[in-house]
Length: 52
Image 1 (cartoon, helix red, strand yellow):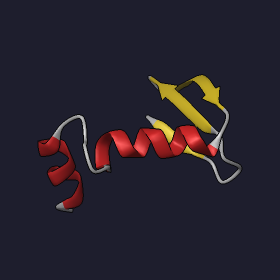
Image 2 (tube, one colour):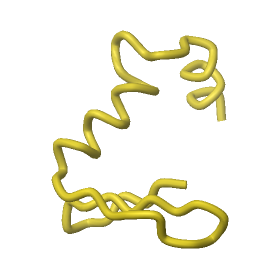
Image 3 (cartoon, one colour):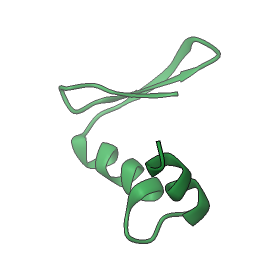
Image 4 (cartoon, helix red, strand yellow):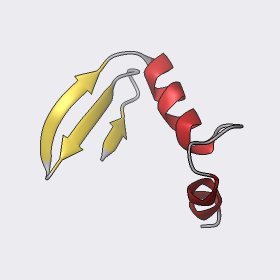
């Protein structure tokens, strides 16, 4: 799971434990773009995420 914090950091959580923190709102934007951007890694996933 990824938790996008308001201070611009991203917390990665695996099996309910913190796996790491990545600084920078630019990383948050890049991660979101991988799923929801103009050229998503998986178009079907993008459509599924936006369908709800």
